[in-house]
Length: 310
Image (cartoon, rainbow, N blue to C red; front, side, top):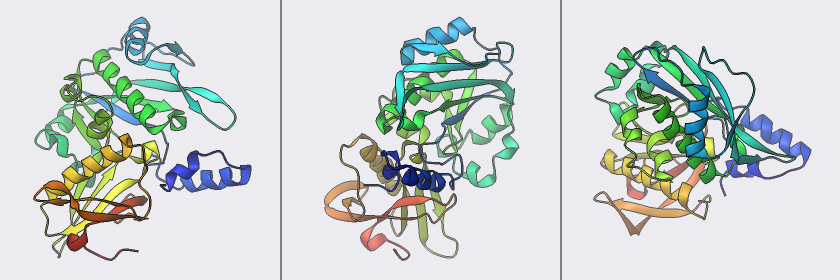
C-alpha cells in the first residue's frame, strides 16, 4: 500500500484533518489528488468556440455535461460539470468540474532552465515552441481527486482530446503538474489509447547526472495527481535510456495493475534493455533526491544502485 492511498479512505475527523495538513505541505502542482493544470500553447491569440460547440464536443468525449458558474464568452471563459464523473467524498458525491480559462499571454520566461532541460518529448522543437507561442489557454479540473486513479486518468485524457478538437491552432500542451511539453499533433493522431495516454502525455520521466560522479538519477513527475507515488532510480553503469523505458513501464504497471506496489516489494530488473524475471529489484518509499521534495517509490537496482538507501 502506498503512502498516498491512505488519504483516500474515510477516516475520523481528527485523522482527516491530519491528512489534509500533510497534503497541503506539497507544492500545489504536485499535491496528491490536486488540480490538473495544463496550458494549450498558441502562436496567435485564438477566438473561443461557441458555448454550443463546447458542449457538443465535450459531451461527445465525456458524456453529459452541464454549464455551471460564471461564463464569459468574450474572454473564452467556460465552466462545465462532467455528470458521468462523480467524485466520492466522505459526505457527498459531486460531479467533477472542468474549466477553460480563456486565451491569455503565455509567459515562457517563467519556465526555468531546469524544467526546460527535462522536456524530452520535443527536445529539438522545445525552444522554437516556447519562443513562437505567445498565447495560452489554461485548462483545469476541480474535485477530480475524489475519483479512482484509472477513472480520473481516462477522464482527463478524454478532456484533453476534446480540447485538441476545440482548439485546432494549439501547437503544444504544457502540463504544469509534471513540466512535460507535448506536441499537440501527437495527441491529435490518436495512436495512443486508454490509460497509456496519461502515462505518455502527463507523466514526465526526468534524467539527471550527478556532477563529479558516474551516478545518475531518473525520476517521474505526474503520478501524484492520481494518488500514486512518483518513481526514483539512483544508479550507475547502466544505459539511461533503458532505465527511462523501465520507468515508463513501471508507471504503466502501477496505474493499470490491480495490486498496488507495497514497501519492500520486488519488480523485474533489466538485462540488455529487456525486462527479466531472473533479476529482481527492491522497492522502498523514500524522500526524493531531486526537487520538488516529495515521497517517491525508490527502485534499488541491485549491483547498479548508487547512494545509500534508508
